[in-house]
Length: 256
Image (cartoon, rainbow, N blue to C red; front, top):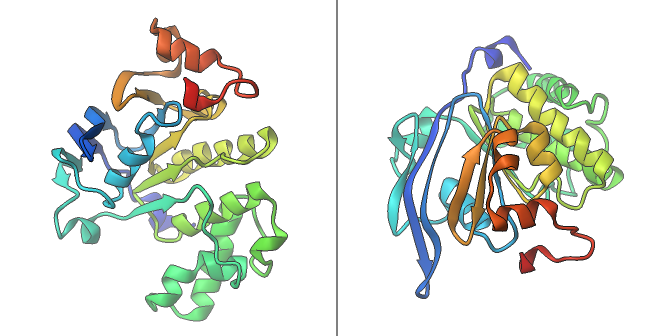
């Protein structure tokens, strides 16, 4: 990444009194939290708790019935917000285009918008892939990569716009523990390197407690608690404790 990237600070994200219903079923029931600039903030909870719906609001795919979402104090509904702040989403699936090389996937935004000449795009892509530990992979095809490598390519593609806020949707889903650990370390290294604000939506307990500055636990559309990993572990709530100590090999998250 170039030196200019390092000068960009992360943004704050504030969610206030967020409510959303579908066909009379209230899915979000008054969500409140604030993410500080440069923080790794993890939203953790079992399946069906409202995490995915919340993420859709954060990226603008859904509009709340009540409440607001602010970036640096400005509403995400503002027509000027996209031009003022750079935000990126790392999809759960990675969402790579299998017909393009790794390098073409990472540089797609720059290419489509003709923001740099081809030789400059190639240089930036190579630098960005090196940042996520994938040096010399630009000419490979996505199908030649492991699941963990694909997730890191997706992170590199997000980084190409020099984001101030990155949203991660279940970044370790379908990964083995070793690959999940690598992805988690990349998220932490990006915070240290470019001071980006990171919001991670996940039900992966090991990831959450391994990388988070703070964790918000969501269940049934409400925030149960917010705190540091140690504070969350000590929070005495039966629903939370059941989630934290569940054996996912024998008990489905949907039943938590």
